Image 1 (cartoon, rainbow, N blue to C red):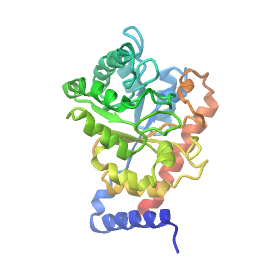
Image 2 (spheres, helix red, strand yellow):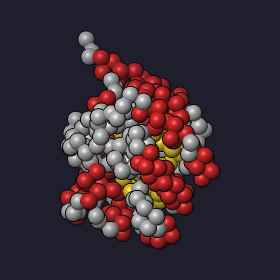
Image 3 (cartoon, one colour):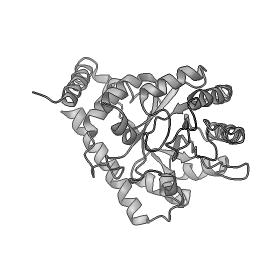
Image 4 (cartoon, one colour):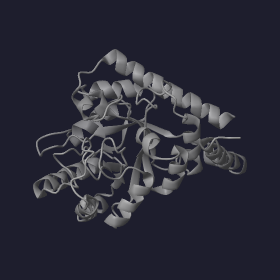
Length: 314
């Protein structure tokens, strides 16, 4: 007898094996790897870029740090620095806290969220990013304001869906575990939210395997269910640390990604190992430990590619 999750693993493996057998050309292109740099804390972008380039990471997900009109990365300087290290931008990690909460029942806070989008979307386009991660409610606020915050968030974002369409940036809605946010915890929730927004400029999903292991019945199935809407997938092991240091079923996740054609086009596996905890945002203010960060990146990337090699070769 197999456990239920093992049965689901086998179904995904069967689909992958069929793809590999019938359409071998579909698995020739490898998954594109990126790294979300806000978890590096106060480290200068140049140091982060050097580390990623050294470990053959071709893309970087930039910290969405335009919290005000005079704050955050400058597009031209950023592009020049990244070009020196052979890096491209996968997207921008939008940061939504209690200060800029799309679901807030206080109009001033929702206005702050709108103003943040008006700065971050053009920046994402200027640096060549594909997506901007959007969280429907504040991270670090697991208690709901009221019973209409879902509708209020969707209405607020819908009113500015044209901004994403105008700049050609994908709004990637991220489901987050219920210990950290009050709404949109699963891929199914994200799809329902996208339907509520009902705007062509807001149509994609940013997955995160750490949150998915808490909220989904099976990560691989959730990835398959997200399908073409999935544009980015945040990655860390089960303990939110370096890949290979936990018990995450990396092989099944990789098979699921190939099954949905995730290796083709501009879709990314973006590492975001922030460590355990209820509210990860303090990580952005941390004092960086170069040796630990070097080991974190080297270990994670090497392990992922080893598992990918095993999956494609077995």
